Length: 171
Ligand code: ADP
Image (cartoon, rainbow, N blue to C red; front, top):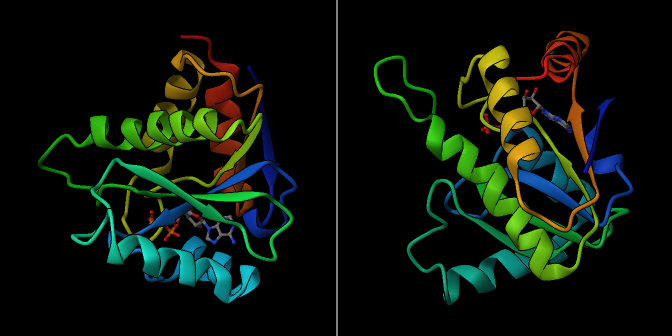
C-alpha cells in the first residue's frame, strides 16, 4: 500500500472512497462531517437516514464504519466512521485504530482501491495531533487490505507537518 499526504479539503479528493469523521447519529455535524454533507448534497443524508431507520437504529458505534453514496463529491463512496472523544484519563487508542481498520475493511468490501482519510478525532473530539497521526499511520501500515492507495488529507500546515514526520518514522 502506498501512503501519501495532502494538505487540503477532503471534499475535493478524487478517491474511490473518502472517509467521514462522523458522529454516531449519522445525521451530520461540524468539521469534516458538515463539509461532506454540504458539498456532497442531500443524497448522503438520505442514505444516512435510511441506515438509522434500519441496521443502525441505535446509531453507528464508535470505532465502526459504514458506507453510503458520495452524492456530488468526486468520489464513489463516503465511508462514515465514528472516532472516540479523546480522554486524558482513559486510553481509547484501540477505538481510534478501529476506525482506520474498519474503514479499510469496508473499502475492501466495496472494491475501493483508493481511500482518503481525514485526521479522525483531532477536531471537535480533541485528540492530540501527534498521537492521532501515529495511530493513523501505524494502523494503515499494518492493515491487511486490498486498498492500494491511502491518502491522509490534512486541513492545515501544522497537521500536515505532524503527519509528515510520523510517516517518515519507520516503527
Ligand atoms: P472529530 O469530531 O472526529 O474530531 P472533526 O471534523 O471535528 O472530527 O475534525 C477532524 C479533523 O479534520 C481536524 O483536524 C480538522 O481540522 C480537520 N478538518 C475539518 N474540516 C476538514 C475538511 N473539509 N477536510 C479535511 N480535514 C478537515
